[in-house]
Image 1 (cartoon, helix red, strand yellow):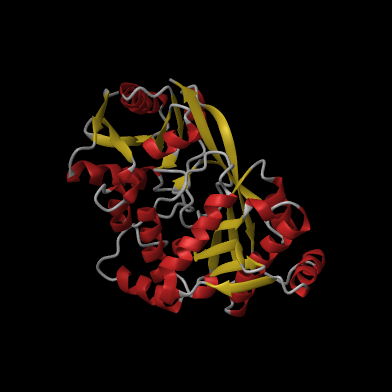
Image 2 (tube, helix red, strand yellow):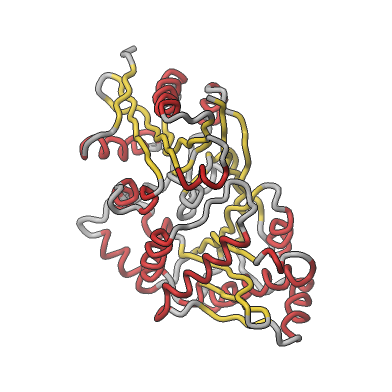
Length: 378
């Protein structure tokens, strides 16, 4: 068998090879949805992705006999290190043939890059940060991925184990095929809370989307501040998020909940873009762009994802915290039901965040996927 060589990505042709690696690997997997090349090119571009304002990254491609057979990235995120002070770097975008030698060569290159920057631990996968696609799918291979959630081949877990990587944290994805009425218990919680007149709910105001996205992220940064691995959004990342969401959502995809006039909780839903781009093979040209444009304009997706739900820390304890979370969920839930969308993924949730897990399970969410973050001392 030919020797394996690892090449750092340094030009447009190499970026193209990096993006094309998974197409051969998932050729026979009916549940893989090819990402859009144009979107991924922007994500990898330091001039277009504000992540690179506080981080450096290096992409690598593994070749055998001139053919790409694997890929990986290595990241040094200064903003994350300022917050966590654990001297950890990250890896991401891992894909590989079912060959431990390919995985070994890829991780050797990534770990060497991290060591050269004085980092003592590696965690991943993060594509690129905890606020992007993350985690290695280890349970739930029989379902297509939702937007911004990854897919993987079952043998990847063995490749991770073979590189001495150990579990750092599991992330849970829940799914429901029927966004029906709130269960009786949660209806009583919501009714009792709303009866006081202290709680008000409103949708995102698209005319003031930057203001409202800033409110949502302010709640998020407070509510999630003690969560494992948390990194706040920067102002540049917020601006990009606002611009992206303006094209994708109606105002009622988002709920902002106030308590006695203070912004206290929020929920965010997004259309599952993978419903629309499945079958595009990563390409928008020549005619797929028109199909996608029609779907986005209609904004009536077959399924949605709820990526964000948060209650300010000061309100989280007791019945009030549950009531605020339920109110935020119920607003977007009712909106999507009214438009005929019933299927929803609620992800991701830390495995030990039992408060939110219990609420989602009361809502009928079924734990159907598990994503794993690995780590290793360097």
